[in-house]
Image (cartoon, rainbow, N blue to C red):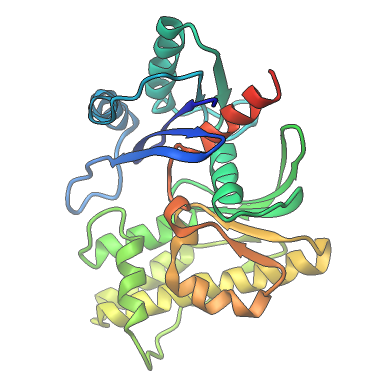
Length: 306
């Protein structure tokens, strides 16, 4: 039985996982601390928290008897993609590889997200469109999944990400960062709200900064939290509907939603039935940042003898 450790140190979650041919054996994550009212962390602070979190996760789980380690070292598999936070995971992975005399495999955060979505949703997709929607990324990707991933960006946000849009509004409404999950819970119980934020889509590209400005204007005018949250979530849903329609018209390929935004119950309930046979959601538990996909990428390489 081959056991592979995965490590991912994204901007807001420290994650480790162990997988084997039998499935997921370990999946542990620690969300970074963001002060109330703040809308994120500086890279230096996030890096420091990862360095402090990793020994705690390993001590709690007592991870041993490993055959390989795989780590995400950059946000995306493109030249120039870099964030300091990934150095924390990379450094730990190198030490584990050296001290245990086991192979070290390198991947990216985005590839880990895609692999986790594919594996945990039990999909057999080989060529598809991935909508990577999170606090740090909102990209439209053409994906070929054969021996390795071939990923081509074909669209995405022109300004801020979907996650940033929701997080900034949520923080303004008084919720902790990251705030998307609180908005999602709020709107599931909101009915008959007529407040709206227009969506803007151009082909495979979209905008959210102007929509954020309008949401904050609504807040200043005294509209309720419920109405503003509902308007924001409907805006995201409308944006995705227009985008998905354009993608289906052009590519006629399966579309996979992944990233933290894909864990929204509101979006799933609104979009799922409309695009049956075309649209797939990542398993909610593995839509947000995790190291499971990273570990599976390492397992794939081990099984292929790389």
